[in-house]
Image (cartoon, rainbow, N blue to C red; front, side, top):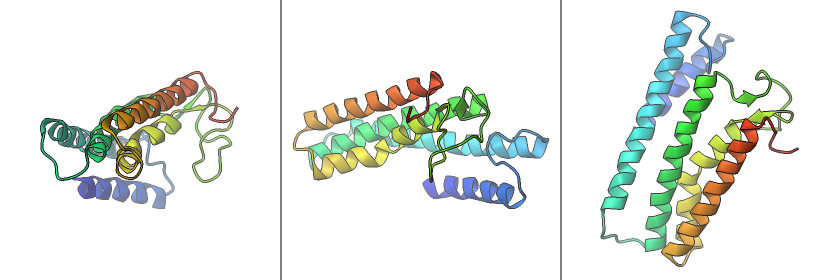
Length: 173
């Protein structure tokens, strides 16, 4: 599913960019609106698919891997799904910047706004719980509880970054 969705996303993004157009939030013509909707449906499908996998990770009781690793995977999936849905908020606003139009000064590499709130920060942190929490559970955590506490702190950080963006404050202010 990941491969299929990423192919759909990359084909649309590349085609739009190669023709000098925005790929995200582009609703200037029926075709571009349709492409943006296809991207949204694809990524929503991946999010639901990941949620279903998460359900089975919670349902299963026997594992051949360490329990802290299992909990890292479980909670990583939960946070991934939550903050993937936060991406839907970005899409409904047709903008990732809060307090100004997209395209102002941004941080190197990620281009997150340096002057206003940017919803991509919390989205990025939240969806990458899918990697961070299992890695924490595998390499660092010794108990299920330590993974749960780390996940709670990670969730609070992502929520803080979301609220900060909603308040029109940049990541570094």
